[in-house]
Image 1 (cartoon, one colour):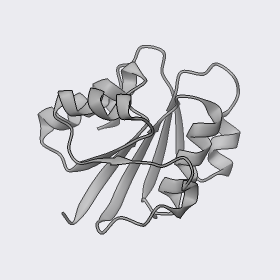
Image 2: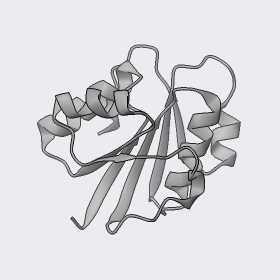
Image 3: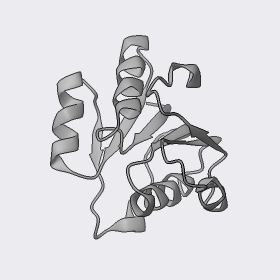
Image 4: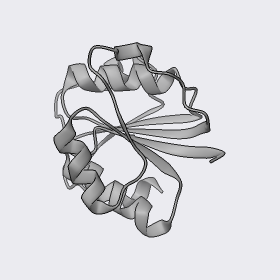
Length: 131
């Protein structure tokens, strides 16, 4: 695999699950990062492979993938986890790092300060426009 899109914390948000389903239907190359076994199982039932488990204790010690990361999509689950995911993905040098948030609080500047290129607010869960 020469390039991939990364979806982070998708399993616990409707937008993330819809986006993974859309990527599968379009046949695009991507990797899903998960924080729990439950999230992994949810995504594997959709057919999402490969799924990479993020160990909370490892944090930023995750090894850089062997492929080029073109775009990273972080679906906000909670503020601390989203910040961790942004830092991890940013360390893999994506051309664009998108954060999709349903949070009404003004967190966009925090995410941009950590390396997000775009912060998208979506209440509907429909994020097909990202492709």
